[in-house]
Image 1: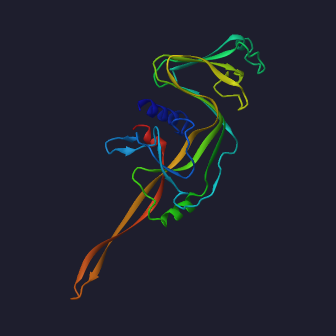
Image 2 (image 1 turned 120 degrees about the horizontal axis):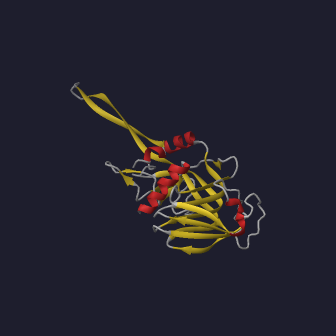
Image 3 (image 1 turned 45 degrees about the vertical axis):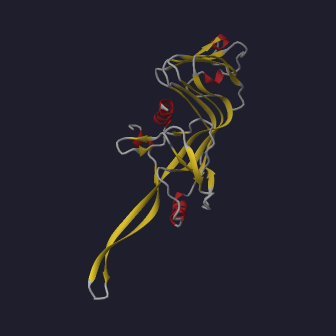
Length: 266
């Protein structure tokens, strides 16, 4: 559990995103989910960290919405944990780092982890799709009395990478050796496309690895389903014409935006 929370918090801190853990696990726009390991703080407030479980979906409940592509162009993401991951090149790739057409046969990328939980993250061709009219959705949810569970979140967007390679060390010392078309990884801004052929050719130590894979779900955006209750006092006239004060209440379902900055200190 500590490693998955660490992963989620680092993705949030470095990229400003809510992580899908494990990367590639199936989650769709409109899913209603829980984070079973996300209860933190004195009041046990649930935060969107770690693994998640699906409760149901808006479609299963008969709620309709329009889903569309929200990203203007596919984006790459590449980062590694500061002061805990050392990335270096071995072989002929060191001969000319400005040349994208290098001999690949004996060139390799070494990723060395020096801390438990340290992350290397590479995702390319990342497209985000989601619900583009939250107000219309909220109005529709308001008409449904059964759309509320404790500690649940509504998935409003997902980001899927055409290709991704993600690793998290679960030991204090581990290493991955990557081979193939790696010349585009010579800087912190990935210059590599989804067609590149790369693979893990050697492992040392212990690490969770999502190898260079197709269509990996990496991020999501969520909103919190909450209930707002209104109360007021009215007077009821009895049969003997006396007036009795009485409390009446009404409620509505709200979609509350999740601010991950708020959760980083949990």
